[in-house]
Length: 410
Image 1 (cartoon, rainbow, N blue to C red):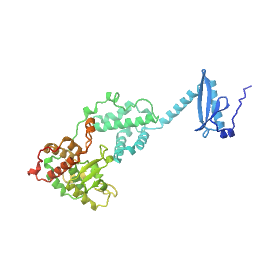
Image 2: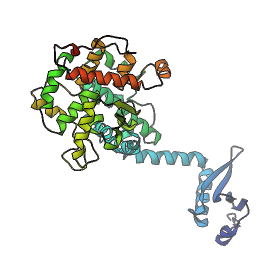
Image 3: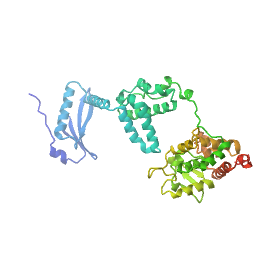
Image 4: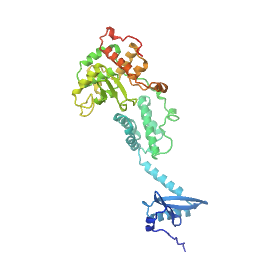
């Protein structure tokens, strides 16, 4: 005759017990009452050692279900199976089954959603989405993320590694980031097959050996006066935006994203917030009289943007200034190239210190020691530099003003 199990707990007692402690129900099942709540515990002996296994909270598991669970544990023990090991095996199998349904594209979407709030602007999200959609998802997007291995990653990278090296390196970094995220979320296990050091660097040539430096076409500074004369004859917001870019040596995105609130016209200063800067640090630009005139002329537009776009509530398109260059039959130039024009002029025609010119361009200081010592913004010196640049642009070629006298400008 089977042994009769004596059960000590009832649903009512489970609900009313309040003093912390363990309360036996029988044959290894206990109710654990703690300050944080009540839960079920199964205690058992295996190989001479005591073990404890949680069966869930009282809020989620009823007394009857807890007894069923304990009965299942005892059945495993009778077969020589450790309930703890078996439960972990079952959970791992369940996670594996769930992971098979999670594709690389699913992980890409989740990764972008989780991180986009920390990215500088919508353009960064657009670049992530575009590169993955173009180069990655057609090849591996529908594959289970747990199945992504080195040969599969190479199928994405090898066709573009030598022809589009810069893009390919970014694609690799983004695949690596998504796979790292998937590993932490337990959708995959093991090493990241998209990692570079000690892995893909043994299978692919180093980007530095392949990458050919491509300089943005730049106008020689000796031609800037004639070019600016032609530009000022062109009507339109984009033409004025391009003129401002040239006079201030800022980047395209910094100019088209300029808001009225960023300008202090009395102090002749433009402060670009850090979130709009490549170095993620606020940048103050001293303004020459001509730039101030451009800003004031844009006040006739009822917009928060200095250079409003065609769509209401949006700034000028980042292609608008390139379109202006094409209208001027100067498709050989790029907007970014005018920063090089300014830098060449400053190096060859002035004696301004290197750090003054670099700070005018808002270049990030790569040398940590130099960055630690350079704490000021050299604003007064940069103001003189930008005024000299504006004067140089306005001077007719062949006049004395065409060349700024070399002198100690600090």
